[in-house]
Length: 608
Image (cartoon, rainbow, N blue to C red; front, side, top):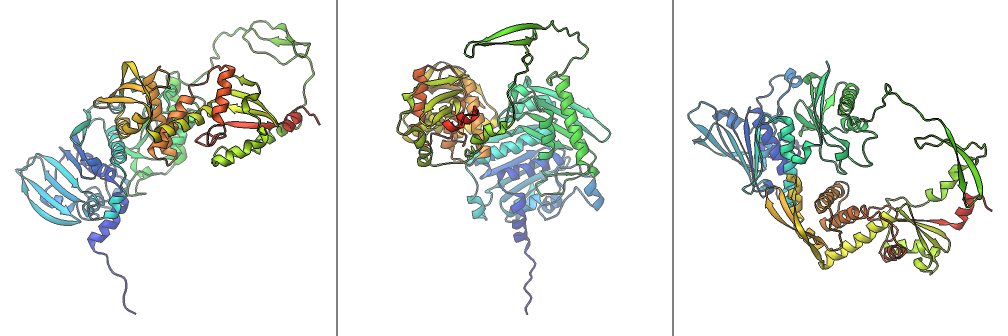
């Protein structure tokens, strides 16, 4: 039979390799910034146009390249970082595989200018689709400038899969922030479409964090510093009260290389155990310095995954370092065993139960804690789990149901009787109790408000009919660079909901109006919460921007509506809930109500 195995040409092999190394413009940004750091640059400038689709350019003042090195850097597996197998176990540079420039040159038009310090002239090289078009001497400053133009120009399918400019720019910002955090001693700047986004001078780590995330991070940072013979941990953690509902501000660096590690993240989260509200995530920027031969970074071309020789020891040290930091800054609760604690003498008091008509003696501490009744009479706990069986049989909160199915579930309970025909009772400003024909319906007040508001905002976005209320004193809101990009991307949707704001320059906006039905108080906080909830939805669900924003708005406002309600307001809430398309679930799948049958109530009291 004829031979069928062929050696792939270099340009095709480079395009295949580019699929792993260059996934989007942010991948190019990462590789070029890391090359600038390896070149010992002290000043790095990133210039981006059209979110990197048109141009990604990195200019540095590093050591530069000779004519031969400039051409060699575009060859596959050409690198100055390693020479022998042993070098793989001593890597402290960002790059070492020799794939990045070859992959970038295979899917873009690249212009490189470079000059070593002390040389009279530099070299200019133009590469398109792995082929060197020209190479000639050029007058250029010492250092290197690499301009990557028209990414994926020769791979149209890959280019079509790129997201909107706003989405791609957020990925670029993520990569830029990670590199800038890892090297605070290097000055970085970022320009997008000729507008300055970041200008970060050389600084300490704490100053770099504030420069990237904003001045409000001054209050929330706690120093974390731990040295052991095995490794050292340094950096900053956020105080629990500043935790957010979205991930994204958690940074781990091993030997100054950003990594993603669910294992180490778990070490930090367990250190915060008991200090964070449910589903909240703390801010942290932590650096682990360890001997290179104790780790393996040659796991994936992106080099964001890493393997440790002794993961358990690393986990324990990171956990201990964070707990120590929390304790040092009086964040973690502690017991004072040296203090003089005096308990007041026990005093019996008598409690009258008006409905049952009997008295019961209790022993109570002066501090407010009460001991069990002195009477030996108690209710048997046998079979207590059966009390919850009716609720266990309900559908899970994640189930999504159609509007018709949701209404049918309630038909038997109401039996054509209006929900508001019976008295509604509010419990702890959180739940509403409504008597129905088959028993009792318990409504989660916040969840019900969320469902009502969501459908209202979705209708507003579709009809584009909204009323705004102007603020008497416009609010100035300073955002992070990533949040600023997000808000500008969603400006049309914000306007349709009733928010009106204008750009104040940089990452600052001026909020001039809010939706008419929103109480005018803490408008700045509301906008920040709304952005936070939007990002949280974005991370966990695939939604279009309008539905995501409507969900976020409903969630944040419903959380503010835990108030005492009049009977008229309670009845109105119940009526609005059952006017919704899906009354018994929130947009996220949480139950808005539970129905307890009369037979279930009888069972609770052991009635036949």
